[in-house]
Structures are given as C-alpha cells and as structure tokens.
Length: 340
Ligand code: ZN
Image (cartoon, rainbow, N blue to C red):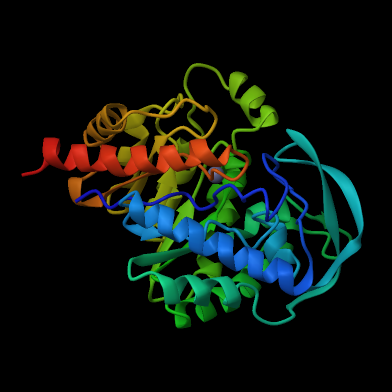
C-alpha cells in the first residue's frame, strides 16, 4: 500500500554542476563529465533506497534540463543559435534552441543513465521524458509553423526513445507536462492526444506529471496570481481519465488545488504530491501522513502513490535528502494509520 516515488529530478552535487539552478553549467567535460554523471546517479539511487522509496529514478543527473536533455539528441535543432523566448505563456524568459529542419533522433538519448540505474537497483525504475506539448513550449519554431504538427513530430521521437527505455528494463515511463496547466483547453484537445502518441505501444506502466512548476521565483510569483482555488486540473483530468495513460502525478500539499479534483481521475493511479518543492521547510512524517489521509477521501487506497509535488532539481541538496526521508517515513506512518 502507498508505494512512494518522486516526480523525477534531484539536485546535482556541486562537483557535477552549478547548484540551485534550473539550467546549470557542467563542472567537467568529456569522459570526466560522464563519470561524474554516473557517480551522481548512483549516489541518488542509494539515497532513495535508504529513504525507503519504492519506485526509483536516476534523479535526472545526466541532463542539464528536463527538456533540453532530450533535445540535444535530436537532428533538426540548432543549439548553436539560441534565442530568448517567453515560455509557459510568457511566465518567464529562457534561452532556447531553434527547430530549423525536420526532426529526427540522432540515436539513443538516455541509454547510458537508464542502463546504469537498471543495473544498480532491484527496485522498480521510473524514467522521465518531457511531454510533447511542454517541448513545443520550450523551443523556438522556425520550421513547422504549427504547434500541433510539431508536437506530433516530437511525440514520434519520444515514442522511439520510450520503447527503447522499456527494452532497457525501465518499469515506468513518465512524461512531464507542466504546459498542461497553462494551456488547458489545448491540453484537453490535442495535448493528451500527442501524449498518447508518445506512449503508443508501450506495455510498461505509463505516467504523466502535471504541476505548477519548480520552486523558482517566476513560478512562485505566478502561483500568487492564480487565486484561492487552482482549478487548472479540472479541464485536463477528464481527458486523461479517458486516455490510455496509467498514472497521473499532481500537486497537493501546500497547493490551492481543491482535493476533490482528484476524484476526476477515477480508474487511474494517482501520484499525490505530499512534499512541497517550493519551500525549504522539511515536512514531518505526520504532515505527509495527513496529506495522504486527505487524498484518501478522493483516491482509492490501492491507487494512491505518495510523491513530491514536482522535481527537486533547483533545491539545496541536503534539504532534498531530508525531504526524501520525510516522504518515506510519512508513507510508512500512513500505512500504519490507514492499513486494513
Ligand atoms: Zn513538475
């Protein structure tokens, strides 16, 4: 009961990359960088296992950013001439590469870290990829001229990589779609269809993570404008409930999402965010168990997966570690409290 997992990313150690940044610079190059990525991946697998988590990730230690890590292995993208655009409906500015030609994978994207993680944990392994709509929102288009067309082009590439990850022994493939909370009607219309295209033919567990973003200032300020009740999920969840995606990861603790919206996901596994990624204050096991108890009013007991609200990448490493421990301990407490 209550298998625990995280949204995906974890902070990079200071010897691997700049800390507390969303787009950090690597500290090394070539073989030394590859070794440092491997070391950081193993370190975080150990920490997740020690915290008692059930579904482990590679902590995204091998990618600079959750979207651009994938784009680096795609032909048709010009990384040399990045441009500044407003992303997530102009919430913040980012330097992004440009799509300049038909998109094609150069080869495998995440084989190295996926196989490494698979070889070093007997727990279930989850691997995260950016979703098609979020990619389209994090790149400049100079070729397709149509967001939907470009999203489906990316979905095809994501599907190729996802199938290969499944063959590497990954148990859960999760697509990250923070853009679903920004372009809600597009998400319900073509976003979910593009997501299903990305997950087509997969026999492993499939998941989507939808959040209000990392705990950075631009996101925290945006959240202040969303009012007392955050109802973004209300438009997208019915389309997801009708989709073939197995699991949905959402924000709960410290958010203004009305908990009853989780009931819209009947029939799906729900990864309930019980750890706040926007606050350095570490949750107590008691607080985590309480959040699980509240979610149980709307999510079936055998479908509830305690999780973090979002990735922990830009956070202090020591705090992230203690938050993972709180997640493990809080879920254990909830099992005692709400067990049969
Ligand atoms: Zn997120």
